[in-house]
Image (tube, rainbow, N blue to C red; front, side):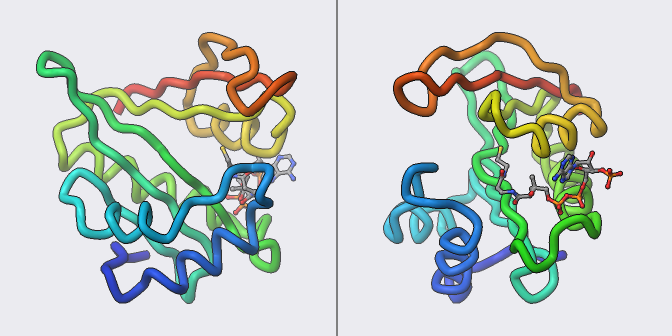
Length: 145
Ligand SMILES: CC(C)(COP(=O)(O)OP(=O)(O)OC[C@H]1O[C@@H](n2cnc3c(N)ncnc32)[C@H](O)[C@@H]1OP(=O)(O)O)[C@@H](O)C(=O)NCCC(=O)NCCS
């Protein structure tokens, strides 16, 4: 498990393309390039790009929170605990950043991810109608660090 740097851009783009379809909303190359250079963002990579997580620290001047912006495990490496290890590393990074609450969103139909988040102590809060496009709701999740 390690934090990615600018040289990892193409491998991260390739991993995202293996894990998400265009309908899921893929990152643009320039977004990932920006994220890799930003001190408020960390891309964590498992092994040889078996999986990756994109983390953001956000603030409104008063509160500070962490956001899980992307989590993806290569289809060839699923069900081996890669996502659980990525999230454990995410908790460590967020705590180092002084973040007390972590937020995430998940498609209501993504039962694998919902179970993963529930196993790791996330609580499902609000439903977000049409968050992923017309007719596809999201669910807002929180976890205390
Ligand atoms: C969701 C995803 C990240 C899980 O990655 P993974 O490395 O296979 O997950 P893990 O092996 O760490 O599994 C951890 C837990 O997640 C849950 N889980 C994972 N895959 C599951 C599945 N297909 N069905 C039900 N639960 C599942 C289980 O609770 C599992 O715990 P267990 O192994 O003790 O049963 C992966 O399937 C993925 O990348 N999917 C496509 C992208 C995506 O949906 N990302 C999340 C967007 S919010």
